[in-house]
Length: 144
Image (cartoon, rainbow, N blue to C red; front, side):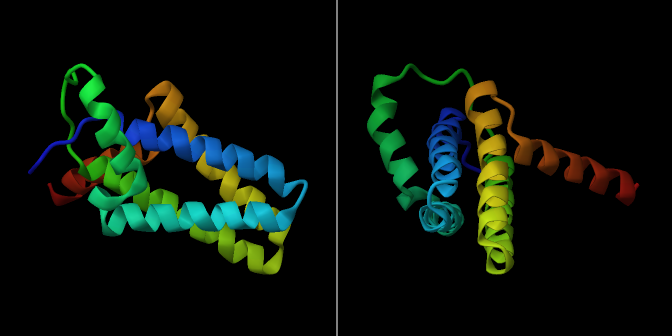
């Protein structure tokens, strides 16, 4: 299994958190703009799961990577991939809630995406990765 530079998902999380925060603020001024940003983030989560190598964040990291020192370690790509699946699920849930109540659904989706991506980007705490590891630990316990 090919391991990944852990700074790549953190860059993506930083961009995602900025987009989510901007969307959250703009939703309160214009719900349609916030909903468009939530839709964009949903599409970006889906794109990362379908073709991570062609994702815009990956392309940006490839431009930045030569200017950085070698990473201290490389990580398993499965937990960050699972975190992307969680992000996709949360953003889709926000869009579904938006069908009933556009303001609540958009704020819900953008708020949760912001919290999770900000934790990853700024505090190096990947919530989706922790969930992934807890599920794996639970699977091992159940198998025994």
